[in-house]
Length: 248
Ligand code: 13P
Image (cartoon, rainbow, N blue to C red; front, top):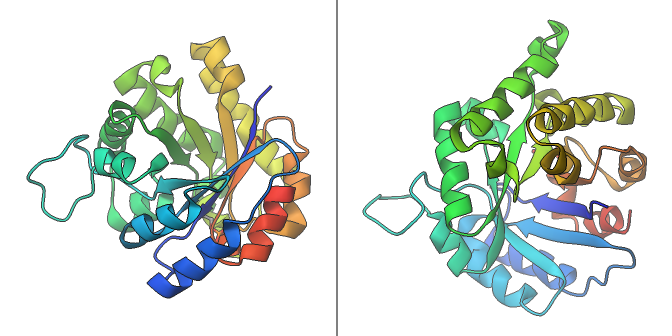
């Protein structure tokens, strides 16, 4: 049985006071059903949010990490070890905004994934196709390629302690959600890629959906057999909306 996981990605959207206000509201969250909840604030606000959420049920994640796991001379980077040190359990790896806007390659993403595992974090590796790739019928091929790059570097065992997030680029921040059926089809494809390398890892890995998730569409997504949770952007900035998604 896979536990449901709801993760809020605050992206580069908050000031310190907004992050503080949001975290204070989330700190009161009491899950009614079995659900793990985490938020990924901007790096600058991690210590503040960690302090507020310390005694709560809400865990912390980073939005990215450096390719080197430990401390070192790498100006401007944040290491997985530093994320662990501040109280993070998770880290997002390979978000499409980093793949497409910052230009992160599959090789860089695989290194970041390794660094996260070495530091004891749970990587949430993001995969997803663009609208153009979907129109060309290449959606499954694209996400399979993105996953394979990680599997090739680490072996399928590397995915053992990880989470996968399917985030179609065309659904991120657009208000257009993949239908529950479209998402299920892609989640099943992702699971079968992993199952073909390891049945137990494929069966047990949590696969999250991300892309315009709201309280009004979360329950339908959760009802799908291969959707184990959600990665929420815009709606995670509103505590009531985010908690309604967690209540599922
Ligand atoms: P939205 O929920 O704003 O579409 O963002 C999704 C996302 O990118 C989460 O990582």
